[in-house]
Length: 430
Image: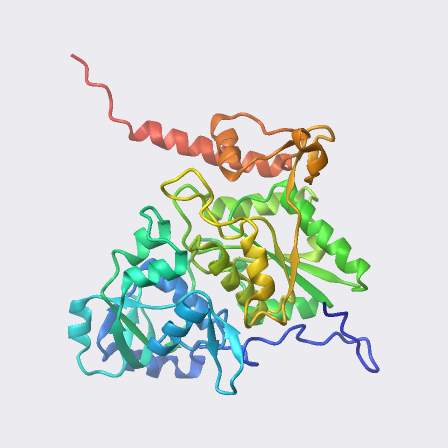
């Protein structure tokens, strides 16, 4: 484990607790002085229309979350990612890259591009947002991509079914020039801090350690226990001001996950209720889509946080996992995520903090670390169970979640039920 950063003669904290992959944080947004000229050029190029999820990946690449990647992957990068979960740099070193970040196109688009070396990229609403330079088009073998990313081709994998299967038969890679910062205008853009902005925030807080927590669910008191205990452990290790990066995933999630705006409102209540300390917590949105690819994907989640400046990463049970789509079992071994993270090539500089499982202690009436010696006194409340409580209006056990956060969830599920009622066809009178 790394110790606190010592400064030679002053109390100034080093501006970067951990170097970005490749040594330089990638920023692909065109300087304002060049935007008009680049936009005019982009208009003259063959166009590739992006899906909503393509835009989320473009956002990820543009801000340096995937540093040192400078665009959608060309074939050599794609093959390295798919087969080795890493990329080899020019100096022979490796960086982790476990998830292929690619752009699919169909036959018609490929024909339209012809022999052009550059293309313009267009959002679903018609806005031209980027140029892809020095392009390479290569075959999209969907079955191989799915099998290697998920370890299965079972039907029902949300990202595979909604994104990969309907995508085109070709992949187009190249260097990105993004015409302006990506915004969603959904009232949450102020939470979407880039890796550069997050590093500046950590400097402003004079952080001597940053520990990141990846989540896609509402924060319950078990999560808070992990985060607060991590801070305590870091203080015991000698750090003076460890800062928590509470970093919910903001891209594609499966249909039954709680939507981003509801999660962000719930997270803010957790801070308001004092379950997490607002003074030592930074809440920001991680713009990546979610694959639910278990030990393969958790490497991506950890790698991206290196680029954002976090030097510690919390990993719990079954990270990025889900239930098997056709059988009643977990898709992945719940312990493999943390084991893979501790061994993954390119993640050596990141400190992985594995945690025991937290569950509801029915005797103490609070979330606590699971004690196998009195297993029967613990209640495991899954995300599915939590959603069922909220949907039926039944309160979870006292001490499971802060009251303010719980109210947000109940209100959301009540609105869903009201919506379902209004959509039901009216009974036909005889």
